[in-house]
Image (tube, rainbow, N blue to C red):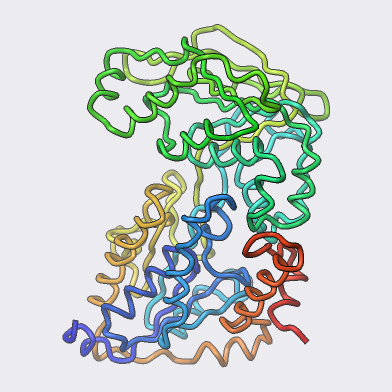
Length: 454
């Protein structure tokens, strides 16, 4: 540790993105450089914590508590927060390289993958990330409209995001009142007429991506019954062997098998988990009216294939949750097939395969949307080890300071102190509404005003 600090005296590093990946990178920089480093964390939003704030479901308070750990990173004397500063709009890649010894990009995976079926662009066909952003209070989604007057909804996907979406749709407003859901979202959910939710997977239960803990929560909802068709629970010999050997698969199969009886008749809402079905068409004239599915099976090559047997569900909204992908950053190399920045251990690689000097990646934009929140810690540590090893003791210092550049462009930067004002405003709002620990402010103007109260 001490040797590394002597090799990198007074390094200045920019981290783009203040989610777990970015803040774990900031933490690793401070620790591995023995504090002899200045880390500036940039985010296009006025709020830090990324997916911990805008991706974790509001009723999952234990996971959201990770923010308290990340808060300590932002409060380290060697770390500064620059909110409302967007790469490509306010600062360029060249600007950052002019002001810092090194740059770490950790912007995550921000868009949903598409289904690629006819009718996907109809009103009522929605990316799950848009719906999640809306109920999590992301300012970009504050005014999104979702037609919750429909009685049946399909959620395509069998991962944890799909489970979160199903659970939020299936809960009553009283069950959500103590969460940090924005007030206007709570009002919309209170008026919801959704009574039946179909969660649909192309493959079988052994291939489902949700965790057993998340899955089990669906069966604990007091106002929603849940059902799985016994036919959907069939396991071929390979899947049966997997269920025997893999604890995660075995747990999921056991929970799902417990739901093969009919759901309680006295519950106002119903969840149907459907496996072995692939969406083939979203049907409607002017908006979503139905979803056409084809029953599937696994071929000899292990790939999903259609059986030619179809069914149509009379749903009024389709939410796709079939994976995330990153988007390119302005001027930064990008692999259009893998949807990541090409890299080796976090070192960005150029078109010729050689490392790009002084530029690094961490998190989903480095490895793809895999792992849990904690996975980002070891991932960031690896990137930072390479970054510090690459810094040359005799390097030329950056040619200018970021403070000068931001002042020159008169950018309305949100500082960490400003964020604390916003944080306090949300806590006060919850108190005034008699609603839990906090209620999120979700609109840009309200968030900016709370950052700098008069």
